[in-house]
Image (cartoon, rainbow, N blue to C red):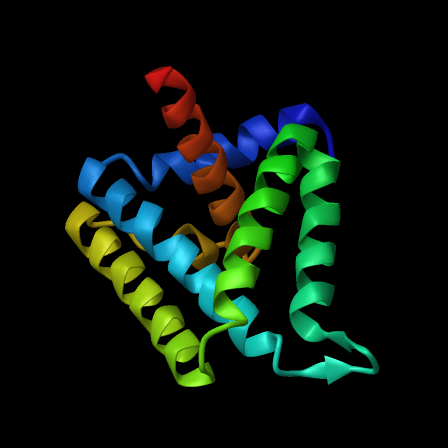
Length: 143
């Protein structure tokens, strides 16, 4: 994929997330989902490697294909969330995962749109990249 496809994917994603309350719900919900997913899948082992690592690496490979900066940002966020989530009991990881989806659904209810991934599952991967990059950009504007 090219840089243009990142712009197209982000533009499409953003068009379903205009309301600041929905964006806030996603800014909280997506990291909760990722943390919960990483924590839960870390419990599943494939030989000496846990499934969370496999999923994170595959996701990062996709991110590198569309945006290297975003992939680096995602790597840092994944590492932090993985470190936290794998130290929690699986029930807490499951609660984080569910709470994250509740925030997502509440945000879309507020905005009056359906989640973009219902049209194309690739947006399950685009959402975290978009939110993580948006967070870094917001931090950069503070300094």
